[in-house]
Image (cartoon, rainbow over all chains, first blue to last red; front, side, top):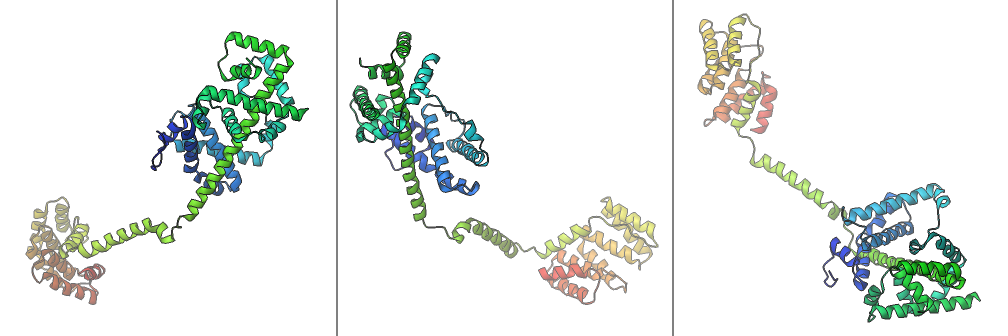
Length: 198
Length: 244
């Protein structure tokens, strides 16, 4: 259901809108975040977390929930609130464990990008080695030199939106226009990176 | 097709087996191509992180707005926070007061309660005429009230000073709702000089139960006498007087 009226969205409407494209998704994200923002206060009281910690946990909860809702991993077997609270609670417990032991830093591993799952193992290693050599900080720095529209488009792409979804969200005529513009932005970033690297 | 488009098509689409094969081959043989793939993926990674940071910034602002909105809301006073509890307490108090005001037990109910609590069964007593008394008591406790009364009256006939028989005859008459007879027996009982005589007290109970005009007033006087003369039943008499 598109968000138009002033009526508060039901949980089902939030889920429905999160699974849509563009602006409606963004608004649903905001509604979802605000609706259960009181969890932050609860964590501060219940677990004696500092506000920034409680906020980070809650933000991570919402971000991971959004991903799960979009890819339809959330099956609606419990209410949205119960499900979110479970994720939030688990993350709170993780932080408590992290604070009380150093195990988490010992066990931390660097994950291979998800996209590499479709690459053969032998090639995976080659790409991973190359990626390790890439100066991510420079990419980050050069990203800020791109124009606003380029950055927004690339953000959406990196978040996993399709060109069609990006077109709807950023008011481009077609997905093909987005693809062309996106690759042009990416090329510009690469050129900026290469100049810096030289 | 330029290299970036080729890489993008591979990762954004669903590459065919041939495309996969070609892609793997290029990766293994062409270092420049491998570097471009690495850049493409690293850039996506970094931009993804940036997007996440941007989203968190957005959430931060939303949280600030949320906090401000909550702070702007008038804080509930203690009374407002507790109002549901106060309302519940007021209702309960109202019900109790109302019950006391409007559902004050009648004099008849007071007498009924006493009869129900004390005269349902009679306890076996020890006396010289134990056998006859106990027979009467036994009959009463078996629910044979008329026979019990006959038993006690027969004893009284044989010995008009048998105060125990008079007492029980009064009680059974009361249970049989023969109030006039009960009043007669309890009046007689009350006239005896005994160490413990419940006659006047039982008489007042009977009057309350009969509830004829003037009975309550007379019962009140009798109860006052029970209290003043420290007679049998004075504790209950005090309670009854409080309610009358």
